[in-house]
Image 1 (cartoon, rainbow, N blue to C red):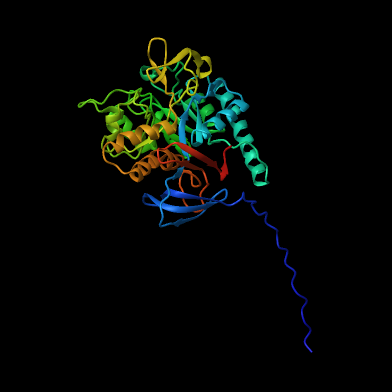
Image 2: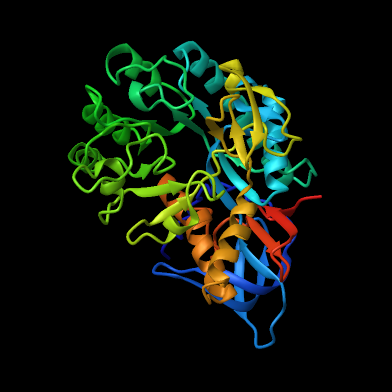
Length: 409
């Protein structure tokens, strides 16, 4: 008789399953995104911490469901200044932003001594770690405070033009040598604004892009040709287009002209009607995204206060924006939701449908910013993507916000 071999024992390594939050369902006009376009249709939306299913429905519901806003330029808000903030301050600001419909953001640091930038980087890193621990605890069933996810740092400077520094202090540097090396080592850096005409800038753009850092063109005196060279080197955004750069001229189109030339770089604009006239939002080939460029004065009574870690000694809210005592613009005081209201007023007056308005603003405020950062998990309502959601009523008032599937209190 043949002898039977003993069974082969196989070690099966146990895999830890991700504990999901409770499955929820919303119904309304859902702004969904496919690979090719966005579309708004009536549907039932099932989700836990991620989108599970979108099922079309025949009966309409008045609510609108859109992706949470992603703001790539936040200097402060709700009385909190990013550059003087503690870890707890940044977490509080994240909570404040979430209650305005923003579910992802970049704390923004302006031109300052490298030591100041490095200190801000360490605080942002600690705040990101604290948020990650809160999210892990939520997966275990804890009910910690949800807030807008800190996605990294936007460093606006110090590699900017001395001729176009705006309210930045005169601490600008060239993007090369030790200064570039120290900036490249920042652990949370995701987006940097620089002037491409500076010595060493094109090599810096290539090096930063190779590290996965997004380069934006801004605070610049660059020519049209220098700007196109920066885009060819890898730059993918313009910071607050039309501001802190030469105006468009028919003989010297400059950075603005390059941005309007079917550029691969997207133009970030501030939709407050102060930094940019609303008529320019419809400029052909603009391809904009929305950023607020808001400062600590946003969400306060607008009384005078210091900004940017004390680099600006006094600014106040006047004429719909933050201003220095001499009237110079120092940032905005709007929310991303304010931007939606202003955009809807403009487009509805032109005969757009509300579905069209939501698709347009979703592209500028969620899909576009997500794509610029190369995010593959948020900014869309699509099965498998994070359930960062906003629910609006028929008048676009905020009814509910979900961050990673958890509804804000």
